[in-house]
Amino acid sequence: MRAGRLRDRLTLQGYGDVKDAIGGTRKAWSDIGGVWAEVRGLSGRAFLSASAEQAEITCEILMRYRPDVKSGMRLVRGDEVYTIVTPLPDPKRRQLLCMCSEGVKQ
Image 1 (cartoon, rainbow, N blue to C red):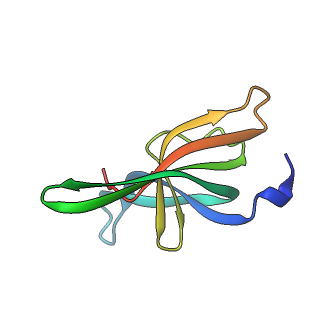
Image 2: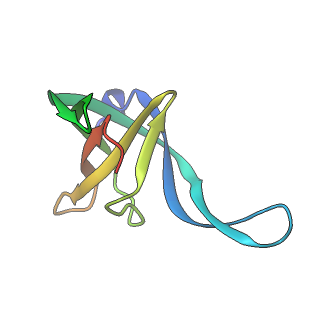
């Protein structure tokens, strides 16, 4: 994989138990690590849901292979939040192509 394509700095986040201030746990998003990636938009759509207009963008994010990336995690860049729908590793496990959605919260 050529490093020149990976120009976007994203933060990989997972949803799970996080310790709170009084020693208990709660469910929240926590940072797992930073990754260099290439974000490519594929398609977008607008629709009505609950009498409000919604928008959803489908994109693919290419990064170096990481064994800990799972469906349901998310990648964050500033205000943009990409929910990982499917991580697809290549046969040699050198790169990971993540099919993601942005815009509609699940």
